[in-house]
Image (cartoon, rainbow, N blue to C red; front, side, top):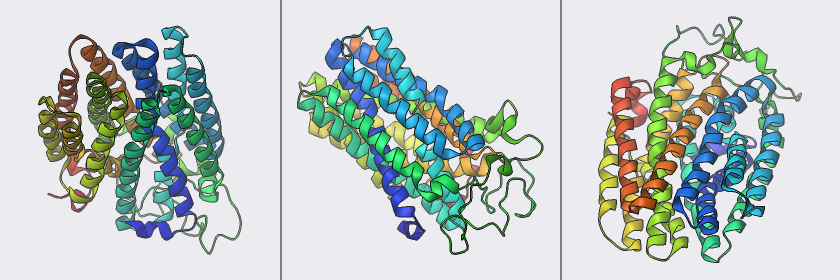
Length: 433
């Protein structure tokens, strides 16, 4: 898996990508802890975090389409500045009206830099065989989980020190600085979106690589390779089809596979959002608010372990998640809860890896970034729903009731995956029987 880092600039891109994911892992819990500390209400905390996720859900497809049309660098730099500015505004306005904070949270979410989606596009462009591309999906999923291990731990530690606003400040600065460095590295500035020759859309007629709309010419050198002697920027329009590409209204949603995946990821996002608020509820209920970071870190550790051990179809993984979440209903101490969170998280990274692979295979030509952002949008929309419902449930019941919200999301994802046959859309060798 790590052999892909031998490509030119790959290590630097991966490092900055990891920092952005670190900020992404911290921001949801930082918002929950900040809002709960300043409002003394889990319902308000769930609302603010949910509004952030709604902003991400609304903004992600737009930023994805802008990247496909304008290129990555201007979009990355613009969103980095806006995202960081909005988070700093929330931290600086602890006693502003809740509606104002919620509105700024929507802006912060809408302006999340699309680093992860563009990074996956870079992997597709610079890796020249299907095995390495599948390794990149696992690598990206692992980076996501590392970010979700360290990010909540940092946010929880800062909150435990009595400075919840500092968590938002650190998140903003890390996201802005890492995105800026990433955007200025040569592959991020010059890589066009390429469709992998071995992975055509399930809804498209297979054509030779040279004849497929949006395919790169075999004479066009990739950035950072020995044959790349002249810096070049490939216009996004060069990767679209004459028939319309991403210019039509539906864009990436022309693919029925992408539409199915969007519904599935929305359901899984509901589970993620509910778990974020449930962790804060469990920790606050035992008088240790900062321990929420340990619980979510455990969830991510389990997911990271699962990324290297579980090679199962998504229906089996979603069923495992339903089962693994159930023990969190037991009345146990915080350290036992951390262990149970780790068990519950094991299927998450493998589900993410399958989603990455299916997205690359199903995206219509010229909509690669947009397709990735749609699946990200779906996850964040579900997260918004999960955080809002879980926050209200905790306010009127308990953190264990929020776990039931997470189970419901996993069960819905299982149903959609089974009906949509998501597991049959990727390469079976990549995720087991």
